[in-house]
Length: 179
Image (cartoon, rainbow, N blue to C red; front, top):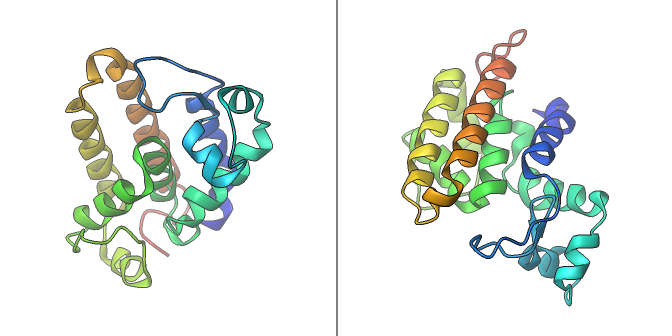
C-alpha cells in the first residue's frame, strides 16, 4: 500500500540493525541489511567491507525502495501484506518472497513477479489469512536452513513480529481485504 512504505521501512531497519560481519552468516559484511554483494550491485561496484560498515543509512533506504519494495510491487499490495512480502524479500530474497506469495495464493510459482494478475487475484483473498500463511511458510523455510541452530531464535522472533505487525496493519480501517 502506497501509504505504508515509511512504516514498513522503519520496521525492516529496526530488524536489520547496524553493521555485522558474522563468519557464520553467508551474507558476509552487512549493514542495515544490505550485504556486500548488494552494495556492489546497487551502490559501489568496488565496495569493501569497510565501505559497507560506513554505508549511510540513506543508501540502504534507497536500495530497500528500489530493489525490494518496488521490485515486489508492494505499493499495490494490501496493507499488512505489503510489509510481510517486503520483509520476507529483504531477509530471504525477492524471488523467494514473490514465489511464496504466488504459491500461497494458488498461482503458478514459476515466476516471482507480483504482476497485475496477482494483484487482481488478491481481491478474492482473506488478507489476514494470507499474511498468516506466508509467515508460517517463512518460519518453516528458515527452520530448514543449516544455519537455524545459530540464527533460528532471532529469525523466529522476527517472523512472529512481522506477522503480528502485518495483521495489525491489515485490520486497520477498511483494509482487511484488498482495495
